[in-house]
Length: 452
Ligand SMILES: Cc1cc2nc3c(=O)[nH]c(=O)nc-3n(C[C@H](O)[C@H](O)[C@H](O)COP(=O)(O)OP(=O)(O)OC[C@H]3O[C@@H](n4cnc5c(N)ncnc54)[C@H](O)[C@@H]3O)c2cc1C
View 1 (spheres, protein in one colour):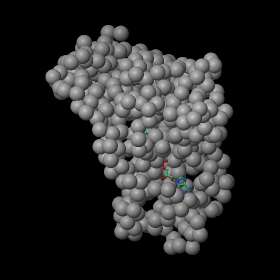
View 2 (cartoon, helix red, strand yellow):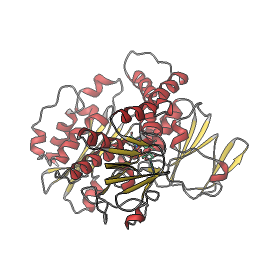
View 3 (tube, helix red, strand yellow):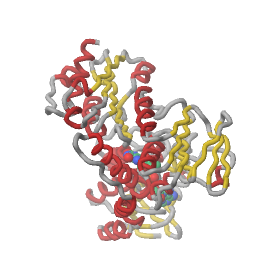
């Protein structure tokens, strides 16, 4: 049994690491148990490599869109080498050293709860007052005949790729599938995306799905929407995917990007009498306490609340506040959702349809930014972009917003703040955005909303 600690952090993805940082600042004695790499999926196989990979082709796209700029060359070795720097060459030695220097007991092994107040990792048993579980999620693998035998990539192989494949079939038209698909297409891969649902980004407004589908087709991507993959086979080096209408699509690589599954099952919850939900997620309350347990919190993807790094980090702030006796209540009404394609897509809060389903007296307006404001024409030669606002007429506040335009992932935060703070629409309309910026789109949309 190792020295007793105040808190064990089980799983050191972005959620666990954020919690650990706060607890160390507060002077608590901590242990961290991590079975793979400190930094988790996000740092090595998800957000960080994917955003690093999409950026150079985006710059080229921007250069092509700006007047009078030549066509910059893209060098895959240069992009790949920089991706390897950003993913620390998949080595967490420096992170371990830094935590050890701060007095953290770092255990590199798979860990699990071993009854109340105990975490077991390999041969080590750590006794602790409190536990935070942040064991993340895995790629969900759909039950398609022949898939396992034929071999496939998940986000792991796709974000760590060494060479650009000549062709690839992507199963899944959510954020991961479209970002990876567009990146590969822009490096010359012949990409086919197969999406079971009738449209891309199914949780977003249908108008966004259409805008994105148009952009991806322009990049030369073939889309099969509303089509299920039913079988996979190999023809030499090529994967042949049969769709539910009997047609076939082919790719040198096959990428499965059809969602994530919370990784609750290995955390030993049964030793403290807690059952996982039907999706393998750990049930939590609004303070991120694990329901039915004392002194155990869960944060990040493993809670199944919203699988984003920023949500995991937010939950880390909520859980660590609660554990230190401070008021803590998670509020998920204003979670931004950005898809880092080009054009960039950003959304927050409810879509108009979801707001109506919740009984909200909702009204939505959409503005064409190139027509309404000046930034788009100074930004690119053939400007595009739109912003949609969804108002809650009963409360006089914003219920949701979405946008498809350059830098939308940055300026969506006007709406994030407005929704979170329940800012009255007239205060929002009485706010001064810098000229010429995309934020002026809010004023244009609010004027249209007032007239709606
Ligand atoms: C391709 C891709 C791109 C993405 N891009 C974005 C993005 O741009 N922005 C965004 O917000 N989100 C993005 N996401 C989602 C984001 O990666 C996750 O929401 C985030 O990584 C969740 O953080 P986490 O700490 O909960 O879990 P993880 O990052 O999954 O980390 C969990 C850690 O726990 C460890 N662990 C698991 N079980 C055990 C155990 N029993 N014992 C010890 N350790 C254990 C794991 O090894 C891992 O290190 C993306 C996802 C993918 C797949």
